[in-house]
Image (cartoon, rainbow over all chains, first blue to last red):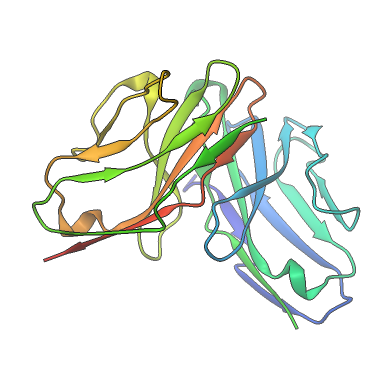
Length: 114
Length: 108
C-alpha cells in the first residue's frame, strides 16, 4: 500500500459532459474525504464517508455533484453536466481511527472543462 | 462556524532567518489544529498537530487560545523549507477547514 491514489490524474472535458473520479484510500482507513482546490485557495471540503456511510454531503457544490463509497473501500466523485467553473484540482484524503484525524492526501485529479 | 485565516499569501526570507507563518482561527469549541505542507510537485502532507506538541523539521507551533492563533515558527529557515503551508482546524465533527495557504520562499 503506497498511500492514497487517485485516477485519473488529469481530465479534460467539454462543458456539459459528465466526469467521474476515483479515489483508493489507505486500506485500513475508515474515513474518506473529498475536497476541491482552486488556484490560490486551500482545500475546500466537499463530503466525507465513514466506512460506506456518507456523513456529510451538504457542502457538495451543487446537485450536479455526487459521491459514493459502495463497499467502504474506494470512492467515486461524479460531476454531471460540467461547467467551466468546475475546473479545479479535486483531492481525496483518508484517515483512520489510529491517525488522530491526520489526513493522508492523494495526488489529486486536475479537471479542466473547456 | 469554523474559520481559518492565514493573512500572508507569500513570505519571503533568507536562509538562516527566523520564520513565522501566521494562522488565526475562529471556533466556539475546543479546536484541533494542524499544519500541512506541500512541497513542489508533491502531495499535501501533515507537518505537525497541536496535540502532539512536537517539533518537526525544526518547526513548532503553539496553540494560543486567548489570541485564537496557531502560528508556525522556525528559528533558522533552510532552502528546503520552501513550500506551501496550510493551517487547518478540525472541530468535533471531523470536518476540517483549511486556510488559503502561505507560500514560503527561502532564498540562499
